[in-house]
Amino acid sequence: NTDTDTGGADHNTAVALALSHSTGSGSAEIQEKLLFREPGEELYARYDSEKDRYRASDYSGPLGYFPASVSSLLEDDPRIFISEVKQSPTTDKYSVSAAILLEE
Image 1 (cartoon, helix red, strand yellow):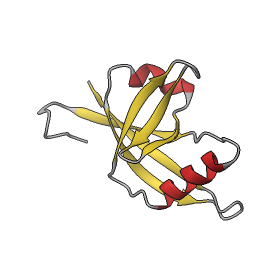
Image 2: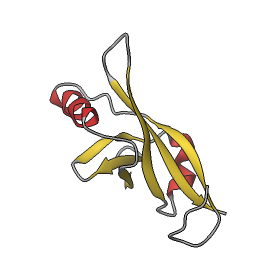
Image 3: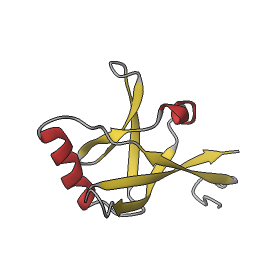
């Protein structure tokens, strides 16, 4: 994929967004936010020093945490977009996949 904004040859790396499983209203609040998210919406990665992981947020606030395995990809503050939102048929919970745009 080519990102015309940068004029360079960027490529997308899709990663699954691991949601935080907070007790109480946190999990319900996140699930409600995910219900209204759509592919193409931008996400932001912010380092959470307490959890030693990158937190995924959008304009409405935190949505969960990225897997630790992609932390090195997030260090340079790349552009991140929602690539898919899906609902589990067994739990009715929503999950998000994200695409990280990496410059080569």
